Image (cartoon, rainbow over all chains, first blue to last red; front, side):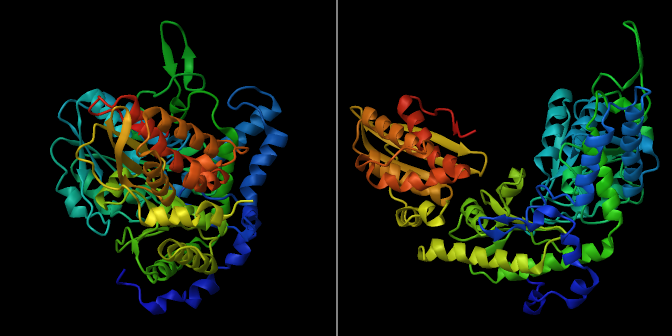
Length: 426
Length: 152
């Protein structure tokens, strides 16, 4: 990194003052635990983030006092469970500024949401020779569902390039938008590199050409404000567990006009109005896409996470995260033989790196012994690893509850590992 | 109690830094590929079998310290052995890596250094990848390209 001066290693005092990280940390009970006798430094938020008391309590309260199946049954518990579940949907409408609750489909996660769009929107429309445009930095969840639908329809997957810094240039993507491009699917923020994509410009360019758009927001929603109508995307997908909610719940936002035209993806209970053997009438949006009893506690937890985020000064939280990222990049690049993977000018949330002579997997084990949780591996983005000619990277990914001290421990532990592998144990 | 020094013993660190029998083997009579999708480790193992004896063995690829050292130690250990002897060593190492009660007997020699790995369950696959690849290569040394071995 050339844009980080040594002075930046000390975080700006303003970021510390305006955001009381100590107070926020007390909301997250797991952060008080130790791992191998050391205080936990949880730097794997890109894989999954921790839940605050408010989320844990909401899920707990539901299980203890309100559990029943939703949308049926006139008894009190069923009505309470329905109100909690649908209340969470209403909060999600505001969270991403959807036009209505009809546009919020509750699914297992971002992965399921991409698969739904691929199978329900794309598959009926695509004909041989049509093109689906993605970028080189996508997570496998935004590659493989499109490959499947390409195999089913004869459509072609077109991949927009990244540059040596792991950046996506809007012009390069636009140059690949042709007369046969039907769908543009891209990340908002790269999970392997931290790159923030120029999504607003890409959406405008796609819209002007009549291309349907999907944004994979899994790595974005916890780290920046998302306004789907300002972005102008057709679909936006994200997962609850990367924004402080439980696993197994996520959201497909879709523009109502598009969702209306799409056939159901899965059949079952709750997605129908009436069933006869000759004819079945599907339910209205969003229920048409929510077959079967959904993840009720997960949804309630996600609603509580949205409410919790609303209680924070998010601008200050995001500024704190940005300061953490700069601090981490400066502290890590001071280590000899360490190379950052992904140095795009606009990054957030994480730092991916490799160290000469130390395999990321070994690094992960050594850091774990120091109580530091990071992710090592290919991050479900093997094409990114191939591009940078590395088998894997180590990735530290942040949330607003992380501290500068945790990052200093990360850097010290990486340096210890490097010495161990280059000079022998000791 | 897990101890890093038990995992990264001097023998392991040495074989990671200076892997033995590393590189291509043009005269190979058998080869096999190993892949650990969890961490991206890839390993290519080449053998030259003469009258059922491993006359030469070399490996290529990139992996973590545990996987590299295990492969390096393995090539040293099985070079010169018959197929049956090599499979016996495989059984012993497999036992050592997976059975908490297993003790590293003298017959394992330097391979005993791998015993620390079993305290780190996430890393057992790293150590065992090359051994499963060896078994695949020994199974059919006539086949030009046996299917890749995966730890998954």
